[in-house]
Length: 201
Length: 201
DNA sequence: GTCTATAAAGGGATAGAC
DNA sequence: GTCTATCCCTTTATAGAC
Image (cartoon, rainbow over all chains, first blue to last red; front, side, top):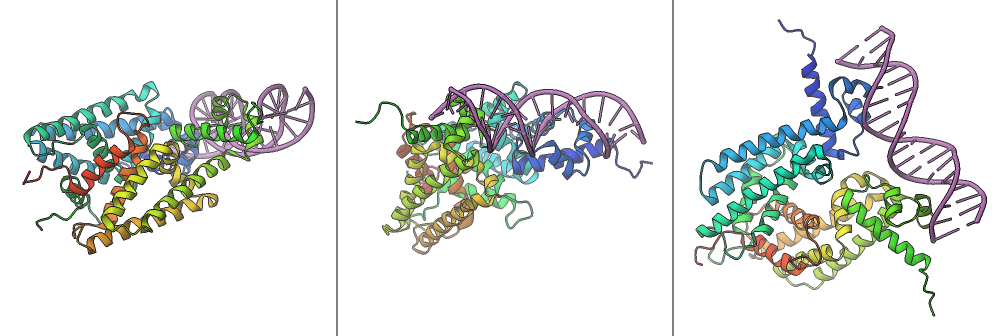
């Protein structure tokens, strides 16, 4: 029978979750180990029983998140739904990621640029390259198939889509007035058809 | 005849410009006064001849930029061009702001949330409220006039537009392959009409 | 206007007791 | 697993010489 007291690994996971929230809200650099310790109700020295360094906390948070997200994207593209349905599924999956892992998305978005200067975080740039390939390929396929407009600058569209999706992590709150799926649908409505009223209706 | 040597105020402006670039690229907190001094080829103590503090540098950069931008927006809305033309003009003006003041836009986008916690930077939140009013009003007018779709969530559209426009400061480079106006036009094409190929063409 | 020198506070990390 | 105590480096800012 398990002890009622929290195990080491449960406590560890809890501390990492607390750290992720702080990193997301204030930025990694602005969050001190003392901030994390305070929020976890221990002293800063005690953190080092669980983690090697503050850097390793960030690393663990981002690695786990990006592996999961990329796996999700992979399973969507492997389903061969065609450009339009694939795009919709990727967007929905992205908003679901914001819903489930808001802190991780915010950290990825805010601190990637700075972190990827360090060798340890080289995988951030690698992931970005993979994401870009996925999106640009998707847009090009769609244009070739005639489902997307032929006059699009795919690189520009890619950047707009990527940024607009991820930036929602700044204001989206799980349990708020809009579900992840509702936000995704409004967003796809704008991306696919624009905000103008159609001439015929 | 002016002296060939740089005047105090010229040097001051130069240092402030250098600081803005560093703040934009690394974030305000991650940029140390020594970084700024190094880039300006002086020692850190010498900065305090020109400025009261690092904070006051940021303050000056943002105040000046936001005053100019808001003035530009005001003159557009006062021209009464109707919702669609006003929206286009505001978007173009925003991309021109990125073109002319890339560093300032990046600082505003990256550090506003953190800075606005301090009383000194309360105006950041005030400006955000004004921007929001402008955009939401514009979208509501457009829906009432029948130029924008009636099923839009104006708050959501506002956030998408705001974020997508400003986030371009992260990748846009003056003198690159695309001019500010070209980016604005591509962007307006997506926002107004979507990326789908129309049924009739 | 910039430098030398340094104060004062903040921040990451460690050693060993409990 | 957490605390006490502390080291050492970084960072902002100041005082006064040149």
